[in-house]
Structures are given as C-alpha cells and as structure tokens.
Length: 482
Image (cartoon, rainbow, N blue to C red):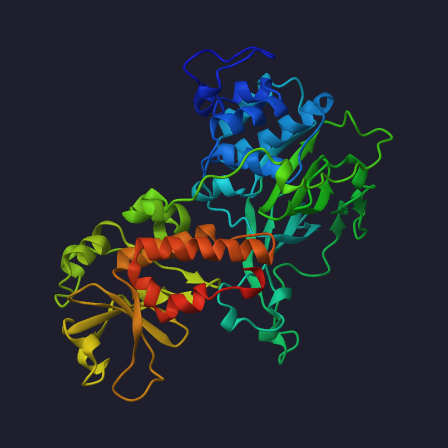
C-alpha cells in the first residue's frame, strides 16, 4: 500500500494537490475524499492528462462513463473505487479501503473486469461480455460467460464473426475458471450442423435471476428461476450490460469483462431499479488522458513481463548448447536461452507458435526461400529457423541477422519471401504481448482507436513493421471509424 508523505487527511480536510500522485494510491484517502473534490484535484494536478496505466486513469474513465453519484450517494462511489482496486490486483488495499469506508452498498469479491489502467498488470482477457447464464452442474452453481470474439485482421473476418464468442465457466463465489475458454465461430460450423459441442451441456438446470441493463436501468430478462433481479443490482454505466444473481452474489459483465459482488441488502426492500448512469458530454469531463507512450517493458522484454501475459510454462527456451550452430545471431541466442519466445495460438491474429512446442526450431536452408536475384537474400545466414505459422505461411528467423520474416509456400517457385515481420524474435515477442494486452474495446470505434495506438507503438518500437505485409494486414485502417 502506498501512502503520501503526510498522514492521510481526515474527512473534509483540504489537501495539497501536488501530493495527489501519492495520495491517490492510498486506499484510506480514497475512502475519505469526496468524488467531486477528487476529480477537481486530478484536473489541476494533471493539466495535460492523467497518466495512462494507473488507477488515476480508471477513475477518469468512471467519470467519463457517467458514474456520478450525488454526495448523499457517496457509498456507491466507494463501491466503484473498491472494484478498481480489486481489478488492479490490490486486494490488501481494497480491504483497507473497505475498512475505512462508512459503508459499501456492494463489495467486489472477485474481478475479471479489466479497465484500461489495469491492462498491463492483468492476465484476464477483459473482453466484452455478451452473455451470462447461471446453471447447476454436479450440485454446484456455475456461471457460463460468453465473451465477444474479436478478430484483429479484417481481411480474414467472416460475415458472421460478429456472432462468435469465447465461452468459459467460472465459480460464482471465487471467479475460478472451471472450464474453457472455447471459441465458437459460426462460419466454421455452417456446413456441419451440430459439430460444435458447447462447453457445458445445454440441459443443465438454470439458476438465479437474469437481467440486462439499459437506459432505464436493470430489467429482468427471464430464463432464471430466482426472484426479480433488477431492483437489487448496483446502478451501472452503459458498458455493463448483463447480470445474473446466484444467492447473495451477483455476477455482472459487459465491456472490459465481468466481476462478482456481494450486496449488503440495505437498499433493496421495495426498491425500484434506478436508471443507468448516463455518459456526460465530452466538454463536461474535466479530466483527460496523457499521451500513451510505448510501455517501458516492451523495449527490452523480460521473461517476467512475457510470462504475466502468456504464462511461465508457455515461454520456449533452451540451454545454449541445445541451440543449432547455424543460429549465429548472439542477441537472439541470448533471448532464446534467458527469456524465451511465447508458445501461443492467437485467434485474435490467427498466428500460432505451437510448432516450437512440438518441433523446436525447424531448420531451413535460406537459399531455398529466396529467388536467385532477390536483393533481400544478400546478408542472410545459411540457415533460417521456423518459430511460428501464420495460417499456411511460415514465420522464420534468420540465423545470421536475427530478422524475423514471413514466407509464403504458395508464392512462385524459388521465391517464398513475403517480407520482414520484425527485426528480431525479441521484438516480435514484445509486439505479440502488446497486441494481446492492448487490443480491446467495447465498441468497433474503441477497437479502431486501439489499433491505431498499437500501430504507432509498433513503428516506434520496431521500424521494420512499417513495411511489413503481416502488420499491414493487421494495422489496415478501419475507415468507418477514422
């Protein structure tokens, strides 16, 4: 827990705005400061925009989305701040804030909701939840979550991909993933009805009450066996669209993922669902965001940074003596022994490096990959090594220069080179980590904004991406949202 240089100011006491960067990290301060006072201080402290990747960024987003309870509803604001702390992985700070707060109308018990400021620290996908359902399996409640399928390469999208989703099952009391995720893409099953087997059987008993959020607030959606849900649920902003109530736990989901809360019940007798928080006009939001810089970790990717996204066991590395002699590029040898390249299958990019797990570095003779007059073949080593596949295309690194290039077996005989993909395996790993983390959004416009940000980051991090066929297909402009 981080605190300011001075003791936390008591309720209603003025504080030095210059100390806000430290104070805002103090959960006791958050429990005591008023919402309006906090946002006004943020606007003064960060006139050029609050820093991205921070708790302050997510407080800004709450205000931008319209979470603006009146002073007499201050406990509702504290519940949202408690959610932010849990979502940032700060469980002890969340407990400290709850202890200092006069009351929390709802208290987050687990979170797979990943607001923008928490992206760098979270492994949960934080995708747009488009459906929630509570069922009973083996005598225990299970919540089935549907997260919208998103494809980052419009040229490869199918007409009905907007109906696709990842489904996974979680325990409502802990958020532990019990099954999945599993991808459903309708086009893949059009010719084979019934070929897709749902994650859970469709005849499991339904549990809990189901609700959907709209301008007038929560309304019961039917389909559950529980009581009316809408009036007892937290008032939410428009990005939170779905909820299911299982006992005393409500699971909520929408843009940025899902989370579960315990309700204190104090406001529920005879209650009527309140309208959703309305998004304010842009000119009515006092705070802004500072320019997003390339994350520092991406410049020299470490094993820990990659593992936080892909998992420690998913990083392929070997001892120095196990690398082929033809791999001469010293930085790449060091990266593959000390850090490791992620073994992953990305449905987002349709790229897979599972070949590393099954076959290791597959060696190819470089001269067989280029045409006899191709100037690109000039300074390359004798051998290249396959580290991934892009559909049927091969992703291979050069043994001498370390450059990672794309090779298309379907091109004309003797010249399969399809352009550079990254200047090194380390740079490609960093780019994949950035895309896996930061390509998100609750709307097509937000995804377009994310794509443009990632394009700028990629070119700054590795200029080779600017002329890459692969990254052109990924970064092509979303003209409808320019």
